[in-house]
Image (cartoon, rainbow, N blue to C red):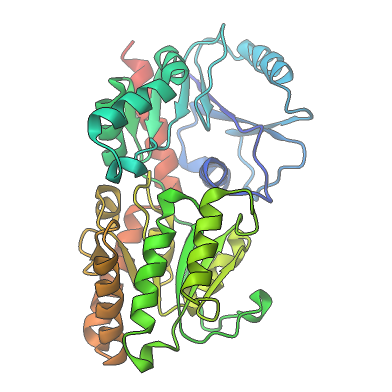
Length: 387
């Protein structure tokens, strides 16, 4: 095929809120902007972004920015109509399930399904609930050329629960310019005086993140031996002060009932500051019931920090060799791995621990944003060329 125009609809990007879909689209755009010459000259990229959006980039004839003054969907629609002058070889890519009429070759991300409650209800009931929730979204999916998700296991879940075939997956990446081992860690800016802590980059307190089981396991740990009482647990969350959220209230009650205020701290920090919290931790813990991928796993591995995580399919896709895995639905299992890790850590079995860390560090070379962008472009081209 001839020239290939890729239109990334990123009108909701916010440099000050790089979470969820935003962080994925931001890093895809950044990877293309910094490495535009790595792509075949047939590919032209058009990024529809807010006026105040900014990203570092190297000059390239392949990369074009179209600044949007308003987030209004009608304004966006007419801007996209104007891009039809590019000819027929265009592709439109959205960061979430979206569809506009009168355009062909539309693609979107579907990051995951709400499967975290599979521990609470049977599969038939779960499938019924998901299909009801996705009734309208499935109409959108059926009108898209293809939907991309972010791991093999989630693709299998989507096929199983939604019975759709126009789906593929790409792995996400980690920015090793940001997430890397640091010689000096600055925790004062977070008002943290802890020297030895576990770090859970949850982002938000909700059922999926399995905070309550982790707190119960951590309570048992610090009351097991006197030498364990010095350990703290830091959890990043942007909604700890939302007293209207029922799950937040449950978490707060656990903290109060088990007198964990001195050992557990909740805070929220910018994405760019997370590297200090990673590097200062004795280990990272990621106790989710379910995830679409697991960027915190890559980020901790890139910082050469040990990680303990839930034994779920998507995490095993990233680092199956990790020995610090637990059943997220079992408080005893979480406790056992916390204790197991500390036995390694306190006995200073550095040789074995370093082998695990180095094994994890090697994994990050399979996950970088330029490879993600190239893989996405390649798969889109293959889909279009088959017509």
